Amino acid sequence: MSFKRYIPVESISELTINRLSVYLRCLQQLEQEGTTTVSSQELADRFHLNSAQIRKDLAYFGEFGIRGVGYNVTQLREHLVNILGLHEERRVLVVGAGNLGTALSHFSGFNTGGFRIVAILDSDPHKVGKRVPGGLVVESVSDLPRIVKDRKVHIGVITVPASSAQKVYDDLVNGGVQAVLNFAPAQLKGHPEAKLKNVDLKINLELLSFFLTHAARMAAIG
Amino acid sequence: MSFKRYIPVESISELTINRLSVYLRCLQQLEQEGTTTVSSQELADRFHLNSAQIRKDLAYFGEFGIRGVGYNVTQLREHLVNILGLHEERRVLVVGAGNLGTALSHFSGFNTGGFRIVAILDSDPHKVGKRVPGGLVVESVSDLPRIVKDRKVHIGVITVPASSAQKVYDDLVNGGVQAVLNFAPAQLKGHPEAKLKNVDLKINLELLSFFLTHAARMAAIG
Figure 1 (cartoon, rainbow over the protein chains, first blue to last red):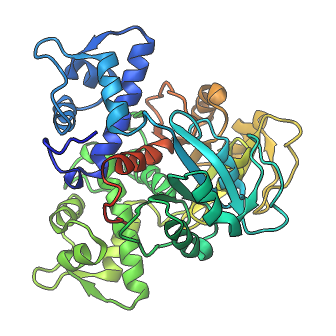
Figure 2: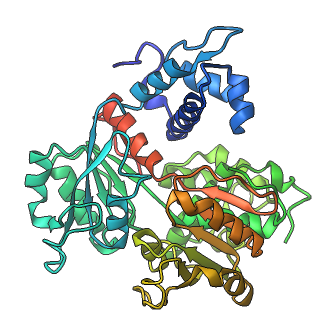
């Protein structure tokens, strides 16, 4: 699927794409509740979003709603699934079988929907061969190139210590992985042929700290 | 510290606050490298940021730079530390001693800087009393109100299964916790007296899936 007639994908920001995920969650919820049509204003009111932003974000990818009627909930959900590439299975490899990697490999907020963790690797010989919750057996990081190729891995997830993260990232990209999610608190030198997304968990604590400092009694937001 | 003369804190978005954290990381790196002054343009060029956005974000909180000279790196870092409330220790309680909670309790990207995990709780009697990596001993979730009070907990982190998340959230807020970070994939009913931040880890996989679908050969971004 290509949306090039609307706008080049390079000019769509990560924030826009993240909002598409949020809209998808909202539409899934509406569908479960039996709602069949929804306007951008109703969607915004219900989930505390911005209706002009919703219309602008969706306009990148085509014309979905009918003026005065709104969006067909199921159709728009399907469009978002396609736009986000969630209609095909994405095979995910986790490198680092510590607590974080083990958690992600069987976490219902991660290893579901279109995503499937197909392997978890570690360099520690004491961990290799052990079964983790969820059923995967830890494999050796020395088998990374073979596993990436054999299991057609789309996405690599780095949960090793910061000191090993660059080497794992390089190995993933050299092995042919085109998208990498990095949880290690390390500044990685990127490769142009692979998309790198760094996850900074502490930024969430800093956000809360800001609100504790300035607005302890502010309203909760979702 | 109050910045009310510039703008009410309620009107500052989460995205702005998250960018302050990013600026802080950049300034810390510049400081380590021995850089003493930096302009918004140099900061933007070096770390792939937007210079106009930097100036706008900082303007919420005062006038920091000197026209034609730029920012004093150390002073601006200290300002950001104060704005984010990181000059005082933030005591954090983790509820759920599964792999994710255990990982967070000793993860160098989480349990550092101004943040200190002071307790990890679980409802499973087999886990209570066990020591987790990092040194904490798992305590019973039934002691939550006492622990929050005795250890003056600022932030609660929810890493329990989705089905238990609402009860844990309610217990945290009723116990007096004013900021909660929720990792459970559950829609929580918010309390007006506490700031709630939901962390959606899968949104990062969906972002990568989007790029795999539309732009497999796009340049890596940091």
